[in-house]
Length: 243
Ligand code: NAP
Image (cartoon, rainbow, N blue to C red; front, side, top):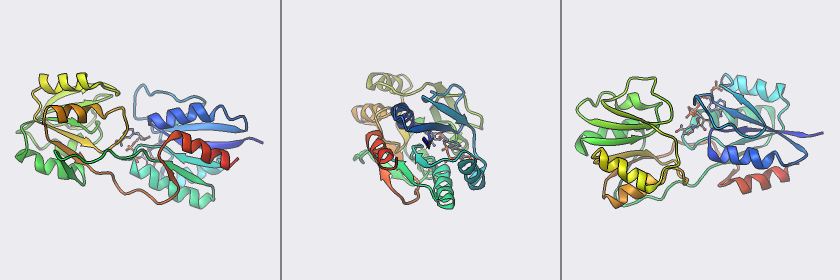
């Protein structure tokens, strides 16, 4: 009988893993998306979308769907689903692996902060025109900064209250040339970024370095302990060890 793998997704790694894992004959692959993006990049194979309903909902899903293995390939800032997954797999006693892409290495012109709130607190003393590249979900954290101007980049339009400025709808990857052009066109004086790591959004950091702009870098939230790998190839090895 085939084993059933649930991939918690919403990242490039999750999509790549679904494509590779679908080639393993003794495995059935189900990818789960949060359902936030209007036109998501759908992974190969079965895809389900939307929240499970907390830990309880995920426990029921794992039992109902007879999931044998879970890979948490969510974004390094998607902490809630990762903690829920860690608790749920313990409850149903199945193995869990996390794919965690390496964080970007700190640079001298970075100001590292613990949270978006901490980023918002330092901005008024740092710059007037800011490139906010944290997605759309937490823009309201910056909404009270009405004396500043923000270029806000995201995939879909915001649903919350946002600070003054312009919304730029665009999906990574971006080239260094494109990032530099945006920063120059909008006369950006500082960048706010999450330390997501990976190649798809690293160009903004290269452009900021070239233009000598400060980067306010939000650090990753704490994640549950457990077996972790840094890339898709190692995740495939882990799957094969569990078949
Ligand atoms: P989150 O704060 O950790 O999760 C909030 C809730 O959304 C979870 O409790 C869960 O709802 C649902 N959820 C999240 N990921 C899910 C998934 N893959 N499948 C089913 N339900 C999911 O997550 P988030 O930061 O909002 O991120 C949402 C999605 O966007 C994730 O798939 C993540 O990989 C992707 N993403 C996030 C970021 C980011 O910066 N946060 C960036 C790029 C991509 P229930 O409790 O109802 O199960």
